Amino acid sequence: MMTFLARMKVKADKVDDFVRLANQLTEKVHALEPETTKYEFFKLREEPLGYAVLEQFTSEEAEEAHRNTPHFRELAPDLIECIDGTYEREFLDPMD
Image (cartoon, rainbow, N blue to C red; front, side, top):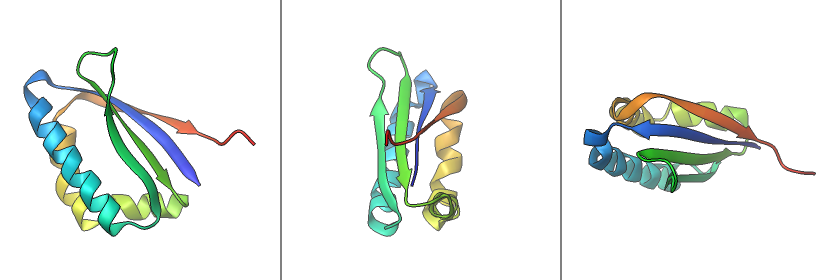
């Protein structure tokens, strides 16, 4: 299992585009990627223009396959254009 939270800030004039693209990508991931067990975007409550995506895959190979899907390759560049700066990934491990 591979789980991470990616945090990002969105450009003020790109929020509507970001939300639209994030929703499109989420819909495609849920419909077409059975090895992706969780994929959900969130608005960060206490960070203006802050967003996050929680992603969970059955394996590292599944995460790599996700990045190589046609829908990711189509939507990700425009989604990234909405981000102000870069994003930060926080990898999460189960508490066994």
